[in-house]
Amino acid sequence: MTGTKTGLVGHPVSHSKSPLIHGYWIRKYGLNGSYSLLDLSCEGLQSGIEKIKAEGFRGFNITVPHKVALLDLCDEVNALARAVGAVNTVTIENGRMSGTNTDVFGFIENIKSKSPTFDFKAGPAVVLGAGGAARAVVQGLLMEGVPEILLSNRTESKADTLIETASEPNKIKRLGWNSGEAGEAVSTANLLVNTTSLGMTGKPKLEIDLSSLNPRALVHDIVYAPLMTELLLRAQERGNPIVTGIGMLLHQARPAFSLWHGVMPDVTDELEAMVTQ
Ligand SMILES: NC(=O)c1ccc[n+]([C@@H]2O[C@H](COP(=O)([O-])OP(=O)(O)OC[C@H]3O[C@@H](n4cnc5c(N)ncnc54)[C@H](OP(=O)(O)O)[C@@H]3O)[C@@H](O)[C@H]2O)c1
Image 1: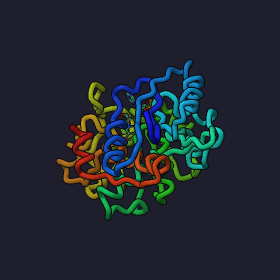
Image 2 (image 1 turned 135 degrees about the vertical axis):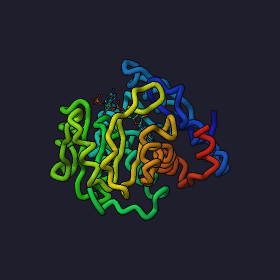
Image 3 (image 1 turned 60 degrees about the vertical axis):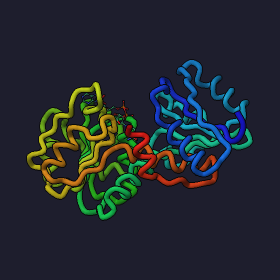
Image 4 (image 1 turned 90 degrees about the vertical axis):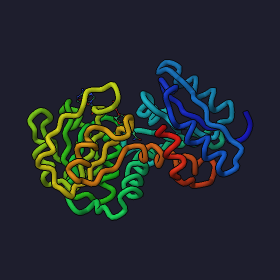
């Protein structure tokens, strides 16, 4: 392998669409580089990373289950990754690893590019889920000036921890999960976001009552397999604007590519079609 070596560290990684995305941009911009899958177990993470550094990699992305572990393994971690509590992109310079988080950018850019007139400041956001992705979503919404976030998660203690560790905890209120509170809260919502894995292929469906959903509320599902989740189909049927999740995956890859190759790549219709096939 020659050129700028990059890749994805995780376990498992074989399902990832990232090689397709980065490979497309490497070809499109005529660069000399590679993006490989680097499957490392938790036990083999530290030694695997040493090997990656020794092999001269320019950087790598991190996926489940290592995003939190990288906070301690990097030589420096920026404020954004600290606020999210997870590193998803590492750049290596003179053997030193710098960590950042591009999921926040991916989430926000996807909404901005698909729904350019959407006003984040116009009202509350209801966020379902409090896992790793939810942390990036909540941080992004706070950075965009959302006035209030109403957060609902099956394991309520995880929602509490997310709120306690968020940059503006006073703007976030926890709702019950089985109490139907989220269904009631959507009447005032400017935005409804699903960050749980419910609705994903092979997972149970997301149960939420949309009968009181504000007709102008934007509904966004970060689940992208299937592209049109049942939540999005139901919202679309009611006439609500919707944004699918694939754009978050595509946009989060852009700042990483830019850090490694010095080119900020575009998300094109051709690329979107390739990854949704
Ligand atoms: N579009 C993108 O670029 C993008 C990026 C990241 C993630 N995602 C998608 O987002 C989803 C979540 O990813 P993640 O990394 O945040 O995963 P995670 O950290 O494992 O969190 C999973 C979330 O789903 C909830 N959940 C799982 N099974 C549930 C069930 N049966 N009933 C109720 N809630 C349930 C969990 O609730 P508990 O806390 O109660 O377990 C938690 O809130 C996945 O589908 C992933 O593919 C998309």
